Length: 610
Image (cartoon, rainbow, N blue to C red; front, side, top):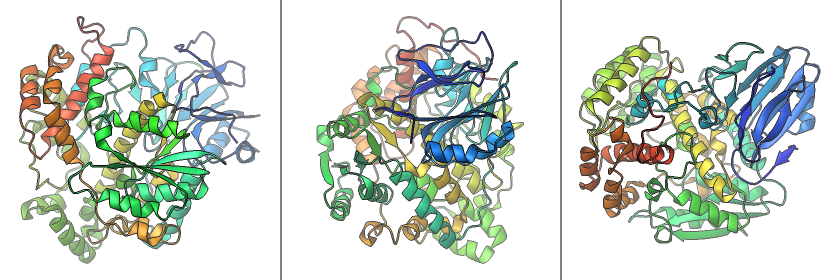
């Protein structure tokens, strides 16, 4: 099996080209993890919870870092007979799991991460690559104000600007691309993967998904290991918990109680635990945990970018509880919504290919999501290419945010909006960035639903990556089997109208696991709304949140009006998108406080990633 496996989350590493005179940023515990065929260092860093497989062949060196359910013997058998760099690339493309691949052959390095961005790769103008953006930003690299302003966008930064980082000159490698470091010259990128054509029926995809998800869970659970998991009672975490229970020596299942006043999660979780004999099921009241927003007040520099979701300190506290119970691996159902449910824009394509089927789905989706007739017609009739949609979005960033009950259907993405506390200068910078990107932007896939599905999957993966960076402090690696490459590919290859339905809840997962998981675990068709927990945190912490506006780093950069933000923190929070916008802004503020001294603007300057 793996060469190395230590407790903790994803490690930190730098990839070097096969040339003399290149040095990597050094961190405590850094060591050479793999070497070029020439003997020069190929990968240097710290592994932590990652597994490392290295195979040396006549054609070059191959390193796989992360989770890959392939042992050394099988990897070497795949590589056997490789004589050229292209042979090596073909042999390691499509390996299952969640990992980075680094290949050194013929003096050139080729590397990539995961489709879902749970494993990311970053590069700059220099000859280095890394799995953390801040490792490449060591030294004189400045923060990028425009990239920070983009991170105030609701619901998030759209493609292709999502590949920028908050560090000038440092970019993220898209999950469907590879990065090459030649023996001379700067880095270059190319496409390594294209979205599959969604042609699998539900029955066909179910067989493949059952095998892929079982492998994604079972192969992570080492013999004799204690493993922890989320058990919310929902249709994502529950099957993952059951699959882990099948393999683990002991399963520690954690269920949060009291998140909502109408909590039906706890009962569902208790019933699910009843099917897992011997599981250590722990009901944990939220009253004994940090409140939902506590992470905003902790400014230790853990992450290499601002958090994109609710950076709750509960993640770390639950990891500590799991670690005290003996677990070093925590499994979650995170990502299940994104891979198992097609965005409702699938009816845009369906109505052009199968109009009768589409009308049935359109009727159901409209009722389920409360679209008006006008909104529904706008979605199905819109024919703008992606670039035109981006340009249109740039002109309407300051339009009123959608209401709570009638969120408009997505076109290429959800409607993009900026919060009311952003300054005119920052809003213009965001609009200019979107307008510039629109000139050459191409969607991630041919159809709108595949494009948005990939956007959503990548966003989910980026959040999962940051959660893992957090729980690593407790010596626990957080894994998200639904976001493994193979699982993502199978779901994207399924016909959207069979992957999703307004009449059934996650029908693909139900069919896939019908013979694997007890039927009682797959009956639930509801999902708790965690907005109540967030609103409780906003009400209880409004004065602490308002205090973050004092000497605001974002205000000092001219990106927000601190008074407007303070007023928003103190005002009653009504249901709708503003609380989410508030959390995005405060995430950026909290992250900046971990990076920028309180009395000096330091290295923060203007600029935009090229």
